[in-house]
Amino acid sequence: MTAFATPRLLRSEYDLTLIWTVLALLALGVVMVYSASIASAEADRHIGYRSTYFFVRQVVYVGVALLAGLIAFQVRIEVWQKWAPYLFGAGLVGLVLVLIPGLGKEVNGSRRWLSLMVFNLQPSEFMKCFVVLYAADYTVRKAAFMHSFKKGFVPMFIVMFLVGALLLREPDFGALAVMTAIAAAILFLGGLNWRLFVVLMAVLAVGFVLLVVLSPYRFNRLIWFWNPWADPFGKGYQLTHALIAFGRGGWLGVGLGASVEKQLYLPEAHTDFLMAVIAEELGFVGVIATIALFVFLVWRAFAIGNRAASMERYFAALTAQGVGVWFAVQTVVNMGVNMGMLPTKGLTLPLLSYGGSGIVANVVALSVLLRIDYESRQMMRGRAP
Image 1 (cartoon, rainbow, N blue to C red):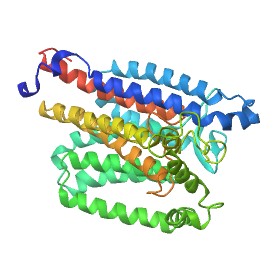
Image 2: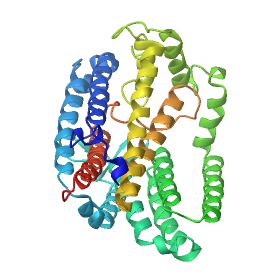
Image 3: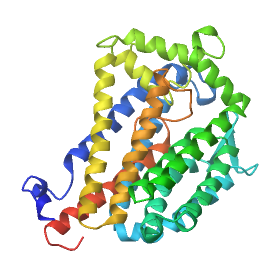
Image 4: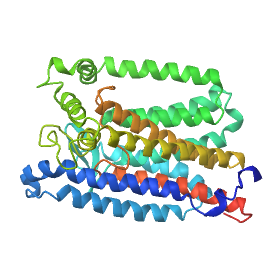
């Protein structure tokens, strides 16, 4: 443990670089959501043609998220571990509730939201956080059985199968992919037998292929992903306009607020395709800077996890690394979709895209990560966390 107790590390009780990285991403998100949403807000009679509608709500979401994150940071990691199964159960209840007519709200053919009068709650966003906590707790509890197919692998597989079935009923294939990646990665990092892991990967690969092939909707998305220009005014419309946005951005972009594609050409410009607007307005430099912020965030998550593991704080270590996997996978998928490298999926860009549930869930998860780092630093000072 003393090998990590460097003067630089102990200079502060908090990981200030990580905090500033998160704040920078949140600030960039607020600015870009405002820029990307002006045209659609002005054209929407349901919200009164107000250009600042999405901007104001995003600012409120960020404020609520920071407050929730501050509260989450006060909770000791051992408490998170104790409540992990109950939070996971609450998440399952939320996934069931959205499927009940009258409770779940349907938008664009998907039933993913619970209408709570003043805002819509998306349980699947919080479920990602709960999966991190539950998978970490499960792996620690079952550490002695990680080489057993029956006792180590099957119980987690059954639970995640239930989660997957509920998500596919919404449907939310993107969230399923992220949660599956989180659970599989934590099991692997927690010592799952490599043969079982290979079997898991093979089963997941076959399962995802079948989900795509047996669903005409998903299969058509895959077909048009390969060549969106074959039908630029139909199935390939969204992707072609995202690619046009990237092409127009060039090295330095057309300038903040000067995007053409956000003028009602690019659907979901302030949510799923915010990265395309960033590319058009801030150019290659802006895209690389955004990627660098996410790379640093993920690297810090794994570094914090490694330090916790060196102190034999295994739940904390797996939780930190699970958060890193979550942000890495979701960021890569969202950016891949925007760049035409992956089929279109309904996944937002963490910390940046418009949406209250996603922002709050992201900040809470990062607050847990900061708490892990804080407790590690306290232990290195010889204090109780």
